Structures are given as structure tokens and as C-alpha cells.
Length: 249
Image (tube, rainbow, N blue to C red):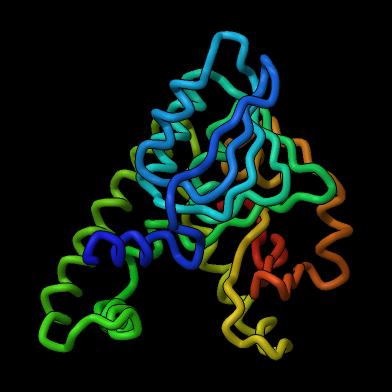
């Protein structure tokens, strides 16, 4: 229960059940479907051949450490990535930027959520409330809050090492703070006050500000128009653009 709870807090509202499903599409490509879990990097490694150049993906996130391992393998093999429908949460934070070339077609969405760096910045009161909402017994709240804080700090350290190894600017894992702040006023316009906040950075900003190159995207601007966000009722998701951000930090 404890490990599942910690993983849930770190992965946000993204999917956690089971492991992703991998299947070969053709000699050059593999499809990945579902939430990222422990062992997925090994599952992709077992299916990978020298002819493999592309990973087709549809994932709403999953475990951060598993996603970092998957991202490192993708970078090592210099794989391209194409989003079929969605790459959200840990998929967007760690798998997407690791690929050599990334494709976001017209019907797909890239959706980042709060990274480990920002989750580790949360005060103990916020962590305490999160654990209460998760059903942790009152007598365990003190020890569980301390343990969660330590776990979040550890993952944030690993996230920083991941960014450094892959040449990703640290701001990629920090700018979500400004995006989320603007989303609070936007979210009040909808009946769903609990909509999860995501961020869809544009290809130009990804390259210019964060060193994440090779992104080909469909009509992102049109999908976020006219107010710079996309609300997805079926997912209870508010996807924000870059309008809260100025120049590169």
C-alpha cells in the first residue's frame, strides 16, 4: 500500500494499473499502449531489434522512475517517437524528450503534469492533506508524511540527473509552476472545478528554451485557440498552452 501510494502521489492523476503493452507493428516500429510501470524498459529492450527505429505511443503516464528508465533506453538507441493519441504525465516528462525525433499529429496531445522537482517543493501541510485524502490512518500520518517527503526529494534528484544526462534544460521541469498558476483562473470557468491541469509546450519553445529538438507537431495553435487552452471533458483535463510564459528563463 505504501509504495502504491507514493507512486500515485508522484505520478499525479495519470494511470498506474499494470504495465504498458508492447506490440510489434512492423520491422521498424513498436507500439506501446498504457501506463508506464516497472520493467517496461526491459520489455521494450527484449522486443527491440537493429531494424527498430520508431516507438508509437499512447500513454497517460505512470511511474516516474520507470519512465526515466524507458527514456534512457530510447535515447541510447536513438529511437524516434510518434504519439498516436496521447503522451501525458511521466510519458511527456521523460519518454517524449528522450526520443531523437518526435511527432505529434493533428489528433494527438502532448500533456505534461507537475514534475518531481515541483512535487518535492510542496510543504508538509500539503503532503499531509494528500495522505489524508488517500485514506492514511491518523496515527500513521506523521511517519508517512516524512517518508513521502524523502521519497519525493529522492525522485527529484534522479529527475535532475536525468535532465543533465540527456541535455534537457532544468527549466523544462520548473516552468509548469507558472502554467498551473494561470490555469487556476481558467479552471473556474468550467463546472468541473477539479479538472487536472496539463501543459502542452510548443515545438519552438521546446527547442529554444529546453534543448528538446526534433519535434514535428500538427495544428497545435488552432486546437488551443482562441484562449490558449483545450478542455477535455471526457478526461477531466485542462490542457494549457505557453501563454503564461514569457521568454526563455
